[in-house]
Length: 533
Ligand code: SGN
Ligand code: CA
Image: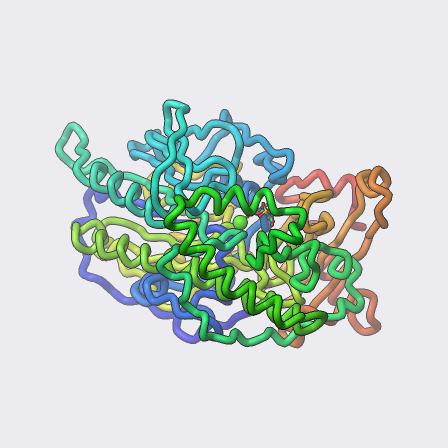
């Protein structure tokens, strides 16, 4: 658990309490992780514009997702409910039931204009938005396709991250002018959902050479042996593996003489560039590929090479995003919107940047269970607000109740999350949750992470259960039915599984009891399949 250094409240001059309606600007990236955000971790990169939000507002240091995968995370966010309750448990088979209660719909009912720009990924047509312009599925970085509300698609020239900011600012500009019948500004909530920094990390061409002189530090557990962790040993998200992290699509050392299995999808993405831009792209990566082939790297040296390529391309994609955050924040300041707008920045989940030798997410281990979360309250908020670090355990199911609370709208009793507004106002409610619940479902699937659920506690303990289904029989795969327990205070990298170790019985009993309580509280049907005694 990360500890707070600076939590304190600052009193701002009280604006007239009367009828202030605050806007919400919710910005969410894809796969951006705290290890690559300098207000959390300075090891690898600098993200000055994202850090501005934390400097002027708050940084949540114990922020988690309920299910570390795009679609499920988005469904938790807009419903305020865990996956089993909102029905969207995994990307592979999920279709979000758009007829259910969602936070955007409730904001509309409270008089808000709502808009969604960018990645949706919930398959069904978005509901609850007065305006949307989304990208199909994972979308494309170069000359991307957009889907508009009339159901039509069109392609725009440019780099997706820049285009999304343009669209967000254009919508905000209209929203800023929108007035209710009584002449007051109509409040709004804009959800800007980025593709950056999702695989396969295709940089904006102007940043191709950025970070090329940087050698990124290897994580201490880059060569993890996965001892005592059966599911961790069995995944397919190894940087070292050519099957998991491919040489063309991921590493971009494309060799036409030796095309690999993902050649078509790689070529489809870069094939979107026009011939002039494609020549710039090819000139850059071809020169690297020629050098790479001359070195005949194998084994550990090849793994390290792949890590450096992955880190550099990811960092480039992030740099364009951080630039755009600066543009957006400047716009809010220039127009005065900062005064009455809550700015939220988060990611749909964290990501492995070589920790355990991995990329991707899905596991309940810290790197992907954690997600960055910084917020800046309206600068003319009518009460004192918190600055610095918020250490309470928060989860993406809390965003929906928070925005409703800020809007002055009732929070439905069936939402699992809790409003963060008291925390943002500098309070520390005594009855704040002491543990968070997690459940991941997408197996069988790419990266082969087994289904698991678990609990993480505020005092730094974690218990997880990887459980089998009938899928393993059908696939002829090994059934894994394994528990893991960690003391993060002593073992932050989660490499020493304490489950079943002598001397940990009391702690295990306590964690099992708390896990059961949370499963009962949220009514997760898994409790029927795997009852906890
Ligand atoms: C794609 C990626 C995976 C990634 C999932 C889910 N493969 O399928 O690496 O785990 O998305 O990501 S790719 O070959 O298509 O790049 S998520 O963030 O959308 O959940
Ligand atoms: Ca994601």
